[in-house]
Length: 312
Image 1 (cartoon, rainbow, N blue to C red):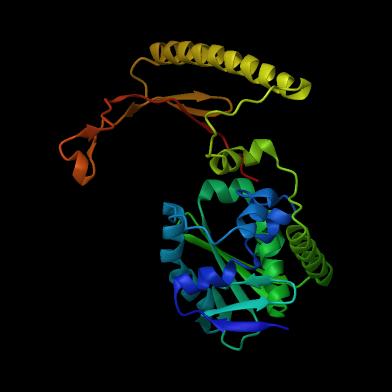
Image 2 (image 1 turned 180 degrees about the vertical axis):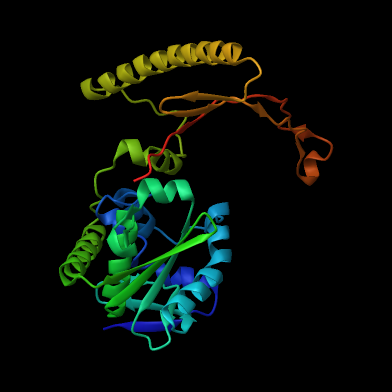
C-alpha cells in the first residue's frame, strides 16, 4: 500500500530513502546507472546509512535553477505547479521515490533536469514535434516515479545551457512498472539471502578498494594459478602504462613546440586547446598547519581535446 510521508528535514529524508530502492537508484538494477552499479547499491543498502557525500557544483546549480524551470514550465502549460514536500514508498516491496513538482491537481509529476548544451546534444535525442528522448537512466527514473506514486502522467522539463527549456511528456508503461517491481523484489531477496551481485571490476574498482582499507600486517597468502595470472597481467599493464605516459609526454611536448604561441589547434575531428593554465599560489590549511602552504603550482600549458559535434 502506498505511503506518503511529509519531508520535515534533509536528515529525515535521507533516513527514509535508505531502507528502500529509490527511483534514482532503479537504473543500477538494470546496469544502466551512469555512476553506480547494482554491486555498489547492494553493499550500501546492506550496511548502515553512510554519511552524505557533499553535492557537486552541477547538483548545486541544478537545485538553484529548479524554481525557474518550474515557473517557465507552468506558464507554458497554463497550469500551477506545486513543489513536492512528500516522500512516497511502497513498504511491501521497499520501493520509494521523491519528486520535484506536481501539477496543482496532483495528476501529473514534473521532473526537472539541467544539463549543458554539449551534453544535451550528445546524450539526449531530439524527436519530432518538440519531444525528446532522455538518457535511459532518466527514462527509467521517470517510470519508477510513476510506478511508486500511481500517477500515470509525467513531464520531463530540462534546462539546457542555462537558457533553453524543453518539455516532453511521459505516461506510465505498465509493463515497465511490473519489471521495476520485480527487479526491486529480487534485489531485496538477494540482500536478505546475503547474495551480492557479481562486481564489475572496471566500474566497481574504486568502491571495492574504498571498502578494503583494513590490512593485517602479519598476514600473507600464497597465490593460486588464477591470482598469479592476475598479478602478472597487472605488472605487465603497469609497465605498458609507464611507457604510454612517456610517449604521451613526448607527443605533448612535440605538439606544443609545433603550436608555438597558438592557443588552439583545429583538426578535422575537433579542437585541441593548448593555451596557458593559471598558476596557483597554494592554500593555507587547518589550524595546526597555519603558515604551511600546499598545492603551489606554476602556470603551464594544457592539452584539452574537444570533439566536433555534428548538428542533426
